[in-house]
Length: 496
Image (cartoon, rainbow, N blue to C red; front, side, top):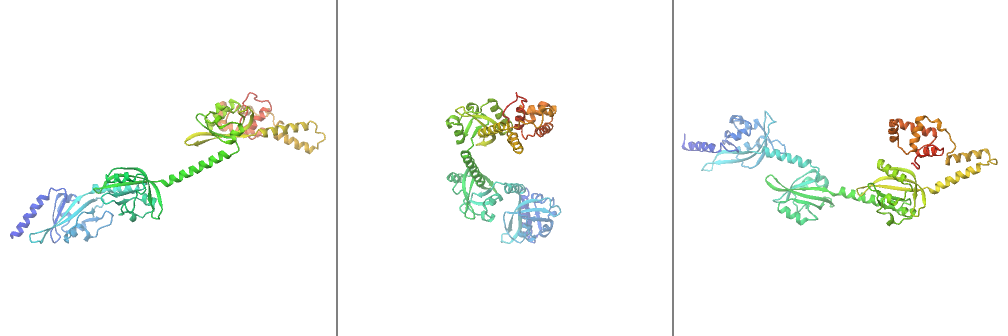
């Protein structure tokens, strides 16, 4: 054996002893691509325990292990790092996913670099592959990548060393209309996400200091030449051992549209409120304190705005009967609305108006309020009473009327003053009389059911039968029917 061969083998043994305990994996190859040796770390990174399980040479290695790039593209055998170094190529930081052909569920991620060792004459002596297991790092990066892409909030990541964007998620592309290749690799000078930011100087200083950038309004340039108002914020992070800044955005356009729509709605409501010729007031639900009234309210009830605003409904005392006021407010608190309840409304000069009061619950500037509409029906009531009185006077001596005309007058009288009974009170069953009496007390169906210990559906059926027998269509008509016959005289008046 020549001295050169002994020297080479001695050097290799020494080299093997040095690298045997390293955490990095090392594989030595002969010039003819034979796998000469591998340390324990390299074997563990391939899931084997003996050198022979790697294969005798680069070709067998390629038959036993599948390699893919991180984008999931498979490597051709000649692209395998072991084949590239066998061809005398030097490279660094090649990331590959490695799986045994016999068990592709097992996968490692290797960062591989190569070395070509030469002798004193510059002749190639050995080929070396050095690899690091970066599986944990790759898995963490993959989880981050999935989370970043799945995040519905628009976001980009800027590398601080050169201020270029290295990642962009679908949310940002969808919000702005940019294509991915228009963002990736672009610099902050080409795509200035802090353009017209309200505190741009602070943002730039925080960017230099690798510090959190607080939320602020900014304007993004869009690829079509337009712009978009956004809220932008920045959070430092380390990605691939490099300082980066994660910028996240909130699109202000939907909020702006909602604000415009709300403002327009409020303007329409305010105009309708002011211009409506029917008296309207708005009071808070908790204290019933008057927040606003329209001009029709002031004109009809003869008040000045200073007389009413800030006072409660009870203090203003414009509802003639306190019991009616209490029932109105109780109904609003319970159901949130009242429909055409007949009430007597007192003006500032003590004159009384007959009104049909309707009310509903509204939300104004996040405050629950009641909106009351007062429809003056005084003239209508007077007209009805005068018409009925005239008909009664005429019909006292109807001898000179034709029978047809008398029948028509009787029908008109029946419509305006239903005093001619179509059914007797005794025609109602005992239970129906009970229900009619409780209706006249102002009780709702549920309250009647509780009082009589009946099911709500049973009460509704009784009410429908009473309406049918009396030939009425509402609680108000039923109450009038009973009052005109002197029934339940102690019951409440003016129910709706």
